[in-house]
Length: 375
Image (cartoon, rainbow, N blue to C red; front, side, top):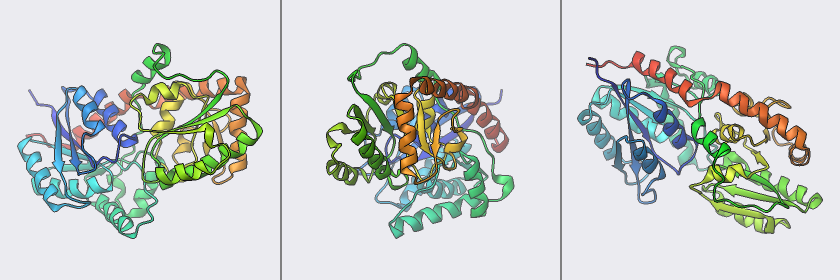
């Protein structure tokens, strides 16, 4: 009897965001008789006690920690390569520029196959980080398969120089079972005022999320409506700067930065609208989760988001940077209950039809079987 294919998911976590939750959704839906999935994470001084390791262990899957000293530690490659050999790994599956670099080198040392899933690009300001990201992009050319999360990312892979025959598009998926349980049955611990309209965001607080636009839009709407509140969940390198900016706004008393929350889906359920102002995305998992929860959504019209939102059908879109138009969309959803219900019902149906974790896992299983050489 043929043994399962041993796949090692490898990520250098920056928190518990889209990529980390994506790995969990895929792993949860893979059949262990076909794919035996483990997780390797790099651990640095500022990234111990990782949330993804707790969740992965709860799936009764093995987690391996790779200690790292600094942004690029060559000894991590040797540790990872040794782990691959000891655990008889058939395929390493990497997520993010750092894991792409380290994972591919380790895979080649160990003589196994390597696949990468680009989740999106970063708008880095630091030239060293830009160079590191650029190096990671070049490494994608040497993977056995590259599996971008969106059609736009597939086109980006072509621009980078990844050979067409190496690019496979498998549409994204989410753990809809968890969301549905909370949507239908779980009242949850999160309270809210019945007199307030709650605007919400969940995600990383980094440059490409463009959260200063989000704060500006909220500030302007608050001048017209005194019953609005803004809840922001998540963390990131821009959080401190965003909080300072928000404190200078007249709407500051109605803005809350809550950081990372274990019960983010319970918070999500309390939103009247989920909003995004990103300038660059793959297919954002937070947006997918909001749609599955039945929360109406509004965002800028950019690649990746346009695969989830069809304007006036599954949500409302404004051209990138047009804050006044996006503000009008927020206002429509918040104060037109009939429209909000129409959009959220269509969005939930769309996500369940096209973005289930089970469908995604089936397609990845076939991909892994095609790539692996199991002895």
